[in-house]
Length: 96
Image (cartoon, rainbow, N blue to C red):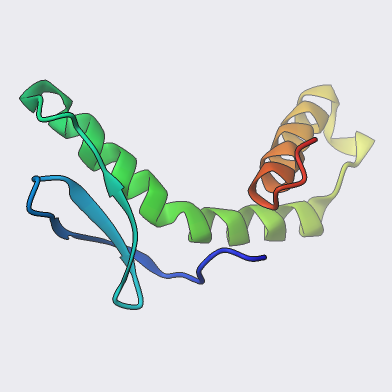
């Protein structure tokens, strides 16, 4: 199974004042804020991050394919590459 293709966009607030994330006119998710005004900024930030997820996924896969786990970039780069690979595995439902 694959995720709904992008682009994902920030939608309107729903009737409960929760931010919607939309793809191709369909609801992907709703960012809840538990009706606390202090959490509204977090709700908006979460919605932006969720909406960017397909783009981030595609970009990260492209970077991994382009550079690979090479030792020529040094230890720190290998650690970052492993983190990126784990994120892709998690998104693909293969995280263990």
